[in-house]
Amino acid sequence: MTETTKAKTKLQEYYYGLGKRKTAVARVRLYANGKGNFTVNDKPLDDFIKTSIGHTVIKAPLRLTGTMKNFDISVKVDGGGTSAQNDAIRHGISRALLEYNDTFRGTLKKAGFLTRDARVKERKKPGLKRARRAPQFSKR
Picture 1 (tube, rainbow, N blue to C red):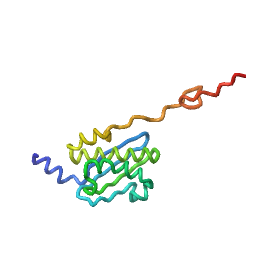
Picture 2 (picture 1 turned 180 degrees about the horizontal axis):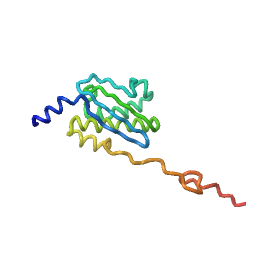
Picture 3 (picture 1 turned 30 degrees about the vertical axis):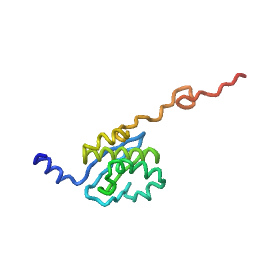
Picture 4 (picture 1 turned 60 degrees about the vertical axis):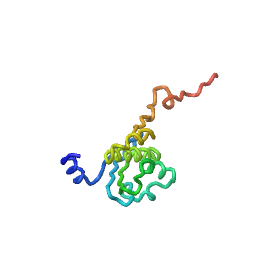
């Protein structure tokens, strides 16, 4: 490690990751030497996300890399629904973990946490009810 890299890591107080899914955007900050505190939009995680599935999805990258209690995590998320927000937070945490330690890349990539899920709602087409739903056919 060079002198400039050491100086940079000492000045850096958090690791940043941006996660996206559909229209949800999550800005994640991992504060090193934390106690495992987790806030989403200035609320504790339990108050913001009510389901246990949401907690499992969000904490998956931390559990996979074994860094559950190493960070205090602050997240600002907006847009999308609850499921898309959970996936965006997971994506953001995974990217921030890469800034912290690049050796996690193989583990996170294999689990699919670094890939931005590009699926979005298809636009409505003219002459149709929705993107692909045609008007009901009436013979008479």
